[in-house]
Image (cartoon, rainbow, N blue to C red; front, side, top):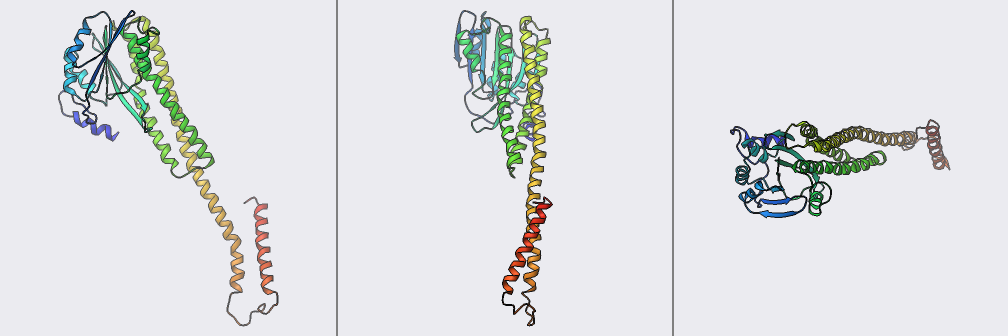
Length: 353
């Protein structure tokens, strides 16, 4: 939350519509990839300038134009001029701290959502995906290379499913569905970690485990913050009266809404489990400490009378009554063993050990 507030200062005080990138500084080249298709054919292009995309506005095919890299704000503004995008839309594209939402600009729909995945270091990453959905094209903006749309690209190339037969509204649904389906993959990984933690808390709780549980809770809070508004996005698309969203696509959007609600339910369940794990871990650590203290107390209790006897016969008086007994040393040992044995027997009878 502190990081989000820090980044939001970059746009503080600027006039509306100012395009400012709020992410980390990057120098890599922005890539613009185009998949242009209809039911009969498909073409893929990688264009160098936004102006080259203008040709796809005049075709009857569906064009998916994917922009990888939003740190070059000048290029984003050029794309905005080519596609006649509102300045506020360009501002939101460059601001990676946007809440998932949908805005209707009559000629196109603007959708913001969050893509969630784990990187190679097993760290949770949340990346903003912005979409411009028009009648014959979709613009998508990604922060970095690598996304969850590989299966969609394969279906487009090989003509599988309905995606090549339908228009941009179904492609937009498929993009959102791919993002939501990947939430399940991330939650499945978290679920596996929670199961391992449950076993560890019950069998052998350790001190550092509480930090791992707290980290997982923070990840879930971050995921919930990204997923919760997706319900509004799915509902907004389903109820939107825009001519872009066809009636036949709305049944798929209802399914998208159901998946989003299911994910939120899973997140809430995992949060409750983790809260219970924290309590269980603290209780287990407390019980473990009590067992240690119990053991030390029993040892101390057993050695108390033994210490008294040995201290008694360790005094340096000349006239000790048993000092000259021939077998006095052995008698003391026998007495010590009997006392220890009697106390252990008593503790077992009381089920203290």
